[in-house]
Length: 260
Image (cartoon, rainbow, N blue to C red; front, side, top):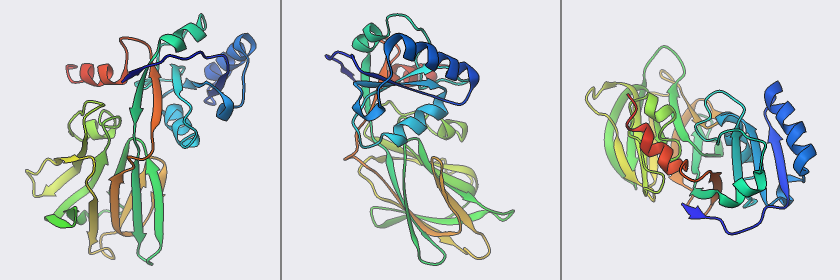
């Protein structure tokens, strides 16, 4: 987490399609102006967590920090909504730097598909048959056969999303770790996943792909009928998210571990 020492004269606003978010965009743009996002000092995203992920993806390579204000439902990645003193709030904000996952999937025809994911990369069974997967870490087979509904690799930023619902661990935002979490494992029944260094290369080989087809999903990008999938953190890509003091992403992740 870093403090920000800069002025925010040029603000870009983006909003989800929800009427509440669109109305907020109109009011804020009239009050503060609205520049093209790639030329902005900061992008203010108005919506929920889905919009935040979309905005992070859309401006992945531009280096513009993104400050979310909640006009959606969940809002775990968003700040509280207020129209007053926005430039002052931006100047006081704390910045979290996160890195996406890079997915490389080879489908049944040998075609390669690449995608980036901010939360997680997931593999899912496509039909009623459970998936059978072999898991290798840095070229070494660690699990010869996992029979399951699926498996996922989550970043610290994504560890409180689907990973948490699948009983995976919550990772502090600055932890140099990735969570490898099975989804409804059948065999080995007691395997609950692993914590991996964020420099690891994770490979999944689909066993019996004709009988047990599997799809791979990186956030919103899906590849069906995969034969193998490789996942690693894209440490060369920095994404900047801004949070009000005392409500940073690492604080939210820490607080989430004490909910009951």
